[in-house]
Image 1 (cartoon, rainbow, N blue to C red):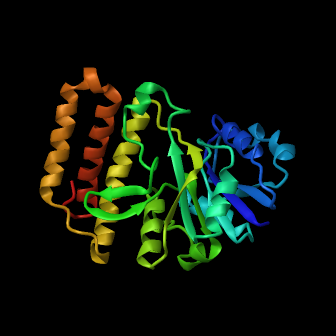
Image 2 (cartoon, rainbow, N blue to C red; image 1 turned 30 degrees about the vertical axis):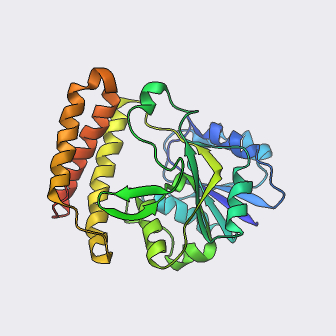
Length: 286
């Protein structure tokens, strides 16, 4: 195969058909395959996708249940492929028309690329207000403290040489393994290109419990990254930034009628996650 699309899967029966329909409609002249890496699902998602055996000729499901987490699933997916070009997306999003073509065109010029995220199609208005969705116009900036740009693995592409340089994604990380990979690549001198015409329709969490859980997990994960990359040139985060974060969360509580409950729940989860991360990783980054 010329190109492999890897999708980590865990209990994705409610969303995987949308993504596979989007992939089935891709027009690209080369040989490509889709590898679905099952990370120990307990639902019937593999029965749901049976209809795509004829729609996507090179569709393969592999067992990736040995280690929990999307990093392991992606690594298993890649190990089942011999393609030189690797594309990554997620089971709960949908690639736009021309995605494979745009990503492969970008990879003909660059070794490491990320595409644009568009949250407008798959999310209700109140969900869109719950949090910012970066990576719409450029790589996601990292400003707290300022460091390299990064991108989500739901719209990421690379040559196998880049993947092999780091032996894939860090399987010890349950979250933000994509940010970690992006930073390692840039520290190694690899140019990271943003392909604005390679679009993925991005799905946000659509209930308050999910919004809180994701924000808390991301908050804690950011503290882990802060501790790891402080020794690799990341500036020190001033403690006042944490105070401002809690102040913003309290201010948003007053503004719930105007800003929405979702936005406040996201900021609450983020603040608590950073506090938990500061305790867990023994560093001041709340």
